[in-house]
Image (cartoon, rainbow, N blue to C red; front, side, top):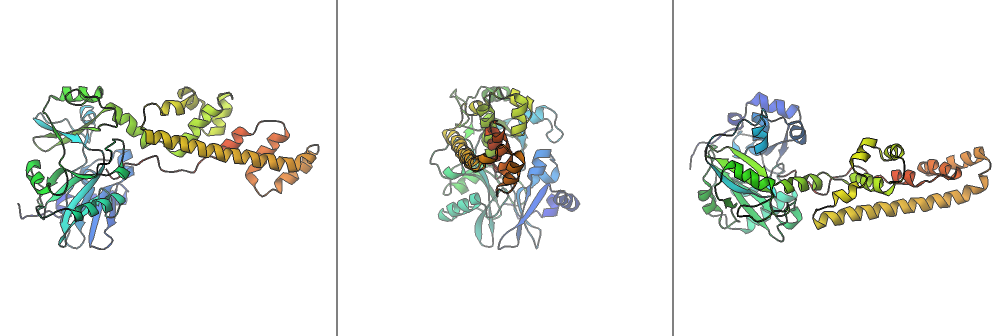
Length: 402
């Protein structure tokens, strides 16, 4: 093993790193006890595609605060084959070289490193995330005698509560993906696997094949050998070219499911169910009530929730239906409260001024519009549905630590 080691500023120009931190494209988080910091690109960088020398390298990069020494060197951010083929500035043309094909494991990235006499684990963005804590317990329970201090081991963290899309059942594992020596050179996977054998498994290596054949498999949702892949079976493939460049090719059905599971929130469910619930109303009125556009309603085909639930994991289906049931229950309670309040004011129906003064005195100001609709003999259900709109929440699952 090499004795040289990298420093933070050997790897990243100091001014560019500081600029990325200032712009909110990279975050720096301190270790809760040790003089270490972990550098990770942010959601902003990801959404705005701010990919450069700094952001691509900051994917769980760990440095010693006092010396600047790189303590853990993760895999740089790499991109979909399609991004390389479409001429994206951050994804140059792929090299004309032989490549190996690895399984793309669908968990959370674990960055395993040695510091202060102990093997430690961070996830992509944290020393103390749930995933990092689970992996640390797993590592502590294993035999780390073969691991080489100074080498960073990159592993995928798999356990049932950390499921993203692929269903690994009851599997609990740290799947070795790659390893890097202290000077930044990649350790051959077969060599690193010999170190790792008492910790967890090693990523599956698929037979070599032409790129066009591999991409045809992803489009047809098929694994090498011809077995079908539904999206909950496999994520796709990682290509590692002879020069060390990596790219990924994801199975089409996985991409669809990932977008659903990591993108749909309770508010999306509220709106989708609302479109179906009030399908008989004029589109303009419905759009105003649900805070969307007529075009949104028309594009949904009138049954956005039904479409959403086609070919999704059972757990997601159950979550959507639980949210719908909870919203329906809240709407029902609110309708009953309106019934009760209107009942106490019905004797004022002939005097609109007196009715308005009585409504204004009610403690729940959000009920006023519904009570005037009742006074005019108009339905209140859409106003009620709008009143139970959920606050912004996380989607069904997140993929931030991958």
